[in-house]
Image 1 (cartoon, rainbow, N blue to C red):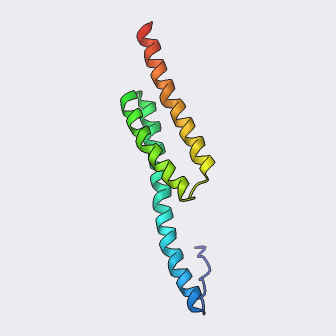
Image 2 (image 1 turned 60 degrees about the horizontal axis):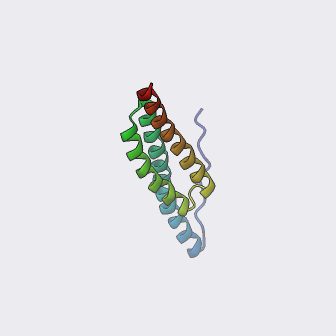
Image 3 (image 1 turned 180 degrees about the vertical axis):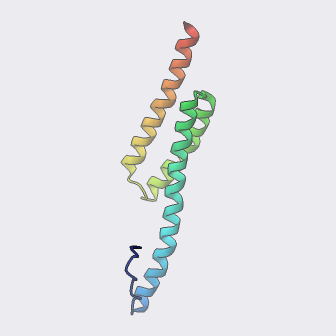
Length: 105
């Protein structure tokens, strides 16, 4: 059995029809930005996992821009973006400390 969503009725008023058209465009834009956000975070985490500090630092700089943009547009809450940036920063920083600790030993 396929559970299909119930079909939405078309709005009667012109303003409602316009709102429905705008919602489709906004939903597509928000979905794209949300995807870009998650991809940026995943890329930094992959670089950290591989142990490449230079690449992780470079990707983190790019990810910061994406995270700020998404937070400014209120797609994710600003505190979530700040929390994610903080956690990524800590991971990148820890990567650098483990590399220097290993070299010093």
